[in-house]
Length: 132
Image (cartoon, rainbow, N blue to C red):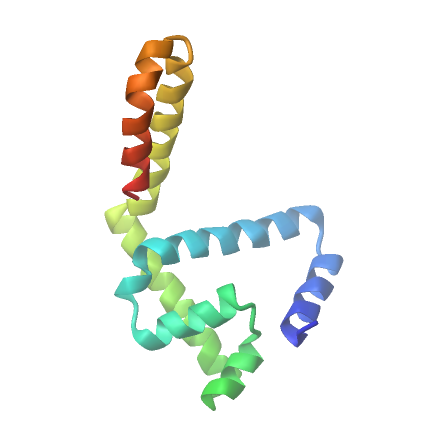
C-alpha cells in the first residue's frame, strides 16, 4: 500500500458517507475536465494532475519528485483545476458531451419500439457517441 493510498483510506474511514461521495464526485469531475481540457494545460500542470489524480500520489510525493514544496504542488494542482473549471464555464464541452449522451440514450430507448428503425439508426448513433 502506497502512503497516498493509506492517507486516502484513513480520510475515507474518518469521513461520512456524504463526504466520501463528495470527494469521489470532485475527483470524477476533475478527471472528466482533464479529458477535455488537459491538452490546454502546461506540461507541468498535466504531469502533476496525472500524478495526483491518475497515479494517486500524495502532494508530498509529488513535491519530493520535483524537488519543490508541498505548498507549491498544491498551488499548481489548484491552478490547473481552476483553469479547467474556467474553460468549462466558457466552452461547456463537458456539459455538451453529457447532454449528447443523454439524447442518444433517449433515442435508443425510443427506438426499442421500432426494431427496423433501431437496426438502421443504432450504428449511426453509436458513431456519433464515439466522436467524443
